[in-house]
Length: 198
Ligand code: AMP
Figure 1 (cartoon, helix red, strand yellow):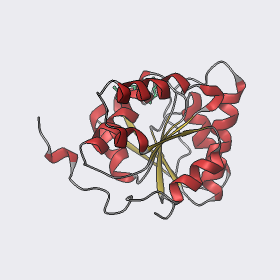
Figure 2 (cartoon, protein in one colour; figure 1 turned 180 degrees about the horizontal axis):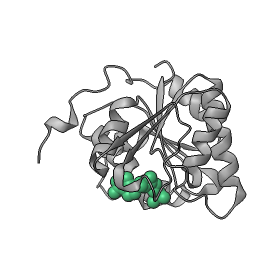
Figure 3 (tube, helix red, strand yellow; figure 1 turned 60 degrees about the vertical axis):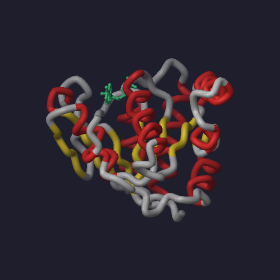
Figure 4 (cartoon, rainbow, N blue to C red; figure 1 turned 30 degrees about the vertical axis):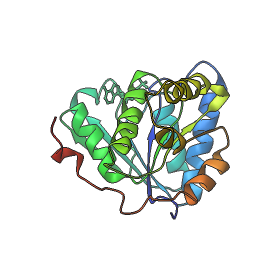
């Protein structure tokens, strides 16, 4: 597929202890801007979230933030974005970020990052979308998660095909090369997830 026009980045509302995390978040945002890919993210000005957004903006790129009203203060809603969408709930935030994006990348982050990224993985697994999903593995941060996913496959809880469609790596250039060669990214929003009720 051609490179995404809007890439959703999930990442920490903290910056992590080692400076490499911030450095790679900055490099990732700069590369997005260089390639003309818009950023969709959680709209905060804290942690890696703020760093990625600032890097895309500094490179002249477009940034859309989606933030729930109750987090505007806690995550210090970024006031310099191309667009800040304020929604009512966390669920609306995740849905809106999904609707605006055609690829998903997790940089290092905590529970919030995992929650958001795993929702995209489970929606892909259910066939609701076919967008590329990648983990940027700064400082081996995701090595144990990757091993856990392999373990899930080995033990028969995740299909190998689902695991294999995910990309893990530490090279930003390789990540974009992988996305450019990713098969099946178009006709991607197969079913509107909102129409699926348990
Ligand atoms: P964290 O990775 O925990 O630092 O959080 C990163 C981002 O995920 C922040 O913008 C959080 O507000 C957001 N987040 C936290 N919990 C959730 C959740 N349950 N659903 C959606 N986003 C969340």
